[in-house]
Structure formats: C-alpha cells, structure tokens
Amino acid sequence: MLFVFVNYIIFAPPNRLKHNVLDSLLMKRITVALVISTYNWSEALELVLRSVLKQSVLPDEILIADDGSDCKTRELIASYQGKFETGIQHIWHEDKGFRKSIILNRAIASAESDYIIQVDGDCFLHSRFIEDHLDSAKERMYLYGTRVRIKEEKVPEIIGKKELNIHFFKSGLKKRPRNIRVPVISELFRPQETISPKFRGCNTSFWRKDFLAVNGYNEDLEGWGREDSELMIRMHNRGVLGKRLKFNGIVYHLDHREESKERFDINDSIQRETLENKKDYCENGVNKYLKVD
Image (cartoon, rainbow, N blue to C red; front, side, top):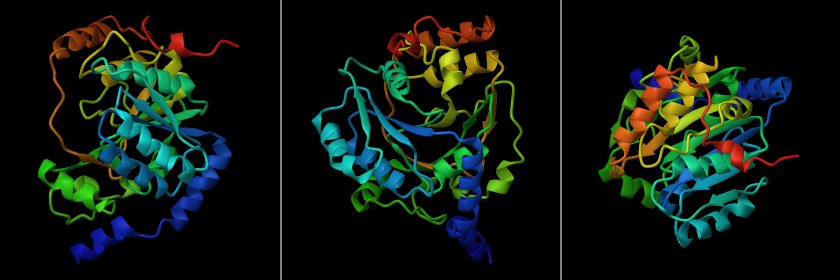
C-alpha cells in the first residue's frame, strides 16, 4: 500500500496541475530565467541540462554562470544550444578561484526576465521543478527548496547512465523523504521574516527587481560560504519574506568533495555585520554590470 501511495505521488500525471500553473502564469504575465552556476564538472552540468529539457514548464531564458571552467564545459553548452528554443547564454570569466558572487551577478545582470530561478550545476531537477517554483511565486517573497542527496559513491553510476528518474526507493540516497512530491503540503509552510537555517542557494528563486534593489550578491565575499544567505538577509532587511518549498521544487544533488573553506570565517564576519547593522544594500554588487539606458 505504501509503495502504491509513494508511486502515485512521484509519478502521477502532471496534466491537470500543469494547466493550472500555465493559467496562473498567463494571469501573472511573468517571464522566468533559469540561472545555473557551474565550475569544471561538465558531466554533472549535462545532467542538469537534460533535466531542463524534461521540464513541464520551460524557462524563457537559460543562463550558465561559469566560474572559470575549461573548454569541456564550453563544448557541452555549444552541443545543447540547438536543443532549446531560447538558446543558452554562457557567461564565463577567468578562473581566479571561487568567485561565485561575481559570475552570478554578471549572469543575472544579463537576464531580461522578471523572475529568477537559481540552481547549482551539481543539482539536476525534478521534471516539475520550474512549475513548482512558479506556482508558489508571490510578490515581495523569495522561495527556497530542498535537495535529495545522491551519495558520492553512487554518482558515477547516475552520471554514466544519465539517469534522471530517481524513484523513492532508489539506492544511494540521503534525505530520502525529500523525494516525495506533495505540493499541497508545501502550502502549509508560511512565509518567514527572517532567514531559515534550512536555506540553500542551490535551490532558490526570487524577483529580479528584489535582487537589484539590494544590489545583488556582495562581491566582497570570495571563496566558499555565505554568499547566498548574506544576499537573502539583505532582502529580509528590505521587507522581503522567505518561504520554504517542502515536498515540491525538488532537486537532486550529486555529492562530491567539498570546496576549500579557508575564507569562510571572513565571509561569516561580513554576514554577521549585515545582520547586526540590518544592511539592505551592498556597495560592491551587481550595479556595475547593468546596462544604462
């Protein structure tokens, strides 16, 4: 009985909800950009792009924020250009260490859509991921979802098979219950005025105008850690709420060796200052990349 229930939740036909979401989109008249950050893991990025092709609702723009990858990533993106009606924008800069804040600012500055959905290049998407984010989008609110983690020892098999349909009982999963999709339960989670410790930048969405109002990512944060949460704290300080997507908006994270955390303490101190001084704007942000009319 449990298997039937779980199987229905994960694999139920999307048609009815899909039409409701499309109707909602027509009412909202919003456009959406999918921003994918990446660095030197073309095999994982290919899974992400394949999962985008399978989406029940496709984005208006796809932007790859590339923190200095080699030619293999460029060649992969070129091979997928013709598979998307919108094409793919590849925003790249030279590899000078972990500079995710900079490349994300450049990518979002290049976007023209109203709404930004942001994922990491090691997280491929449930087939209704974009649909779920758009269905929950509301003014003056950002969203953040969860990730089902695929254990590192299982990752070569998933990549080798280019496997996208990860069922509930699949071996090698961490946080297995997160693989259950029940959107109605997500509605029980209320928007919050402060940032949640559950927030992860690998699965988030927000209005581009809210992003620009706080001047985007703080480029004083270099190296791993705090760039995503510090951004959202400034949004909170400006009155934007945060809402968790639970049991929908699912991504699958390919576990891997963690990045160096040598600058984490510096980044953490910048975030503490943002919290303590209720900052809602950073000086070293996205405005330098914006086109002036």
